[in-house]
Length: 304
Image 1 (tube, rainbow, N blue to C red):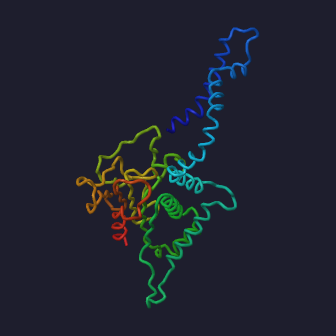
Image 2 (spheres, rainbow, N blue to C red):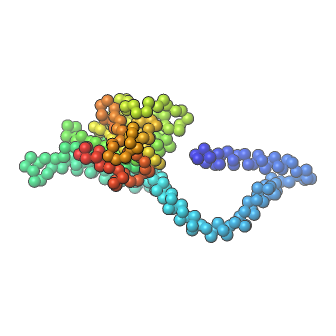
Image 3 (cartoon, helix red, strand yellow):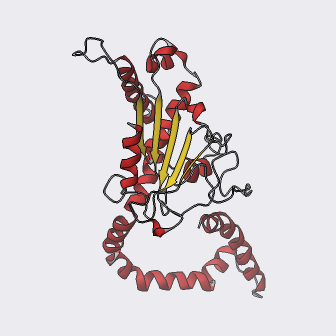
C-alpha cells in the first residue's frame, strides 16, 4: 500500500507530462497545438470531465454515507495515527503536548518514590512501581524512562526518582499492543534506532531467530537502557498497531490445543528474565483489558 502511495504521489505526476508531450508530437497540425490544447483534448481529460459531470451528483449525495462508513470502520486506526501525530509534533513551541505529558508523568514518579503510609509506624513506602501501558502509552513510558535513565537532564532525573540513587524503587514495565517496533521504529527510524537497528520493511531483512527460541541476551530494545528491572510485552496476533518487539515471526498462542484458555500462552524470555514476551491469541488492537484476555490479568497478578 505504501509503495502504491509513493508511486501515485511522485512517479505518475512525473510521467504524465511526458505522455502529454508525446501526444502533442503526434499531431500534424500547422501550427502545432500548444501544451494546454493537447492536455485538454486528450482522452483521459475528456473521460475525467464526463465522469465528474455524470457522477458528481451521485458522489455528493453519497458523501454522508461514505463518511459514516469510514468513521465506523477506520476510526480506531485513525485515532491511533492522530495520537502519534499529537505526541511527536513540536508545535506550539510554548505548549508542546509531549512536555505536558512528561510533567505529569515525572510528578507521579516523584510522588510514588516519596510516599510514606501515614498510618504505618515505620512510615513504609512502596516496594516497587509497575507501569501498565497500552498502545501509545507504551511509547510514552519507554521514551520517558529511557530519557531519565540516560541522565539527559540530571535535575529532572533526580526529581523523578528521588534525591539519592539508592532510594530509587524497582520499576517493572508491562506493555500491550506496543507500536515501538511495527510503527515508530519503521516510520521514524532516526528517533527509534534504539528499538531496532534495521527497521522492519527497511529494505534489509535481518536473520530471524528460530521459531520458539528464547530471546537473546543482547536483544534490543534493552530494558537496562530504560532502567527497568523487567519488561513484559504481550500482544495479539492480529494487532494492527503493535505486536512483538523481540521475537521474530511468531503468531501461535500455544503449541497445542488451539490456544483455548486455560492453557497459557507460550512465554519467551531471555536468560536473565528481563525480557518477557507472549502472544495471547487472536485479536486486534483493543480488548486487552476485558475477559477475552485473562492472560493479562494472570501476568499482572504475578507481578504485583
